[in-house]
Image (tube, rainbow, N blue to C red; front, side, top):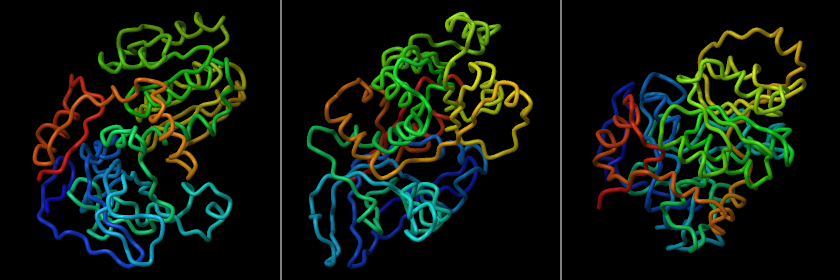
Length: 350
């Protein structure tokens, strides 16, 4: 079968690899669709979180093709989605339930670690070690296309849940890519009093408004964004800023939008040093909270959201492409200036 291999920045190839063999405690998934994630793109642009030598893809849905003989509760043909994180089960974080903070979470992360052992979902089949905590049933009411959104929507939900946000409060979302749009969706469902967002791509702006953002500003066109936010918040500022951008300038600007004792939730991944002025945190008594991935209970919550069709979040899928076109119609388009895509999902070739 073909699998997408990241050889380095700007270099992804489809390599012929064997269909994975599974142990008695594993399952084999036949992939239906896999989404291109922002972390995939970041590592395609420059050497970033995901290192060269990685077989990519971690936002996938599919059906079980094989089941290890020691496993109970799963059968061939079951519709599933997957949590790609690894957990040791023995560390301080794992024993207390915040498994995404496990120091070994990325040791065997599916589609994010070099080598075939942890190969990902940009392929026809993917092996799932530790299905006891990685697999979740995908109900018939949720399409396989929508299933690719479960993982990123769980990231967004996690950020909202660990924040100090309360119903009727005012929030700001920096960046309306998939994660930012998910945050807007969850904030709206949680009863936000005001949602202000920033975005430069027109289609993402339209989607943010459709999902519940009250105002969406293009920071490249607004001369004084801080003043705009203050005008909308009685000269006070928002309660929480969710930085989903992964852009240093956005992170640096976040404190300027906050009310006294407000909070910044950092979701976007910044792998390099970013200068900040700590004094502004002292003066406003601001709280900075980082967010990474999700906990176990957040996958079922997102699946229920999709099952009930509470919001039109499935409309974030703007293109479906074949694996054979993953570079030309996927990565190259998404990293080009002026592209109008939100979420591109990939279907394996027959």
